[in-house]
Image 1 (cartoon, helix red, strand yellow):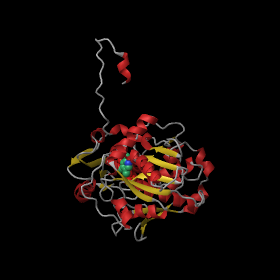
Image 2: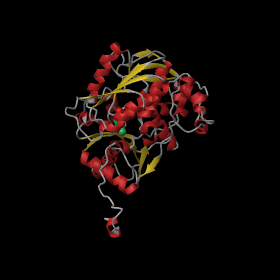
Image 3: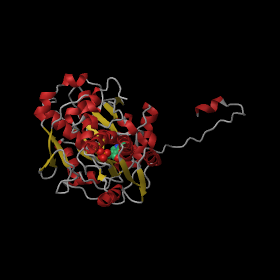
Image 4: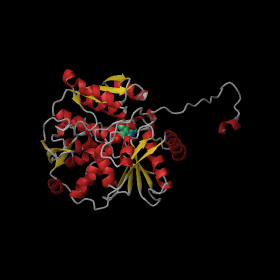
Length: 409
Ligand SMILES: Cc1ncc(COP(=O)(O)O)c(C=O)c1O
């Protein structure tokens, strides 16, 4: 049943995709055909008739629509309303953490992470193309979103994750109907299995940036942020960077909004945050390189950003440089300390990746990379509830007298 005011999901709206473009060479590819990477093995980006968008919609019309990701239909690739696969994607709040820091709390999305943004759009496109089987490597959250949306769409899904992926992720993926396999390897090697199985298993490879539409869904983080800021933007965005889809997607959103005149010249500095145990983008940024080398022996408590090599590395680095931003690595100790402090002082349970952005924010302040007056937005990309938390060992014996003084210790 459709909710009465969910016109975003029921009303036909014009679409504006003109073509796809290789992100490395600019070579054009036709829209409305199934694509993975370009002929040069690089991610494809969706291009729109931006003038058409500007003529079709204005900020007031947008504001009058029901809140949520699908209000941005004109900026998205899905042509037919009936192909939209939605589990109800709300606007995520900006929460004050004191000073000029806001947390964009993406944990409110279906399956508890921002992966829902990319997957709702990509699975809708898969439905449009009549795809019956999808496969993906995951560090947990993307696989959970794929399982949920694919099952909802009646599409079969196969998910491959490193064997130390948070247990709850593996279980929820299975429970929501996907075929999930633990693999004794890191995510890029899980991705290799997906690539190798393509012909044999006849599945569509939905790995990060190996198909063109997840990034379009992630782009809505930028559209939504701009709208929440009254069509202005913060000074700096801290983004926990694995494959980098969100960072690249937001940068694309800002370019499209600028092109249609909805935002001015001021763009945020984009900061790619990684963990010291897996920091290929940070190293490439420091070396002044255009591409990152694979990070060997990758390890961090922040599972979502344990990505030793990213196919969109050059796009992440390009966005960071164009925005006058930077890339920064934080230690697992700093991540855990930040996570514990924000939970106990603000009542906000960040995921470790989100906590990494807070640690990076504080380190950036103390090293003078940013100033206290800079309006900063940190991305908390998932709920902290899916990750192991410290055990609680204290118990009360119901048959013994209660020592009330001991309760506060
Ligand atoms: C919680 C969390 N944060 C950040 C990331 C990294 O996202 P991206 O691939 O857009 O860099 C992931 C990806 O798995 C994640 O699950």
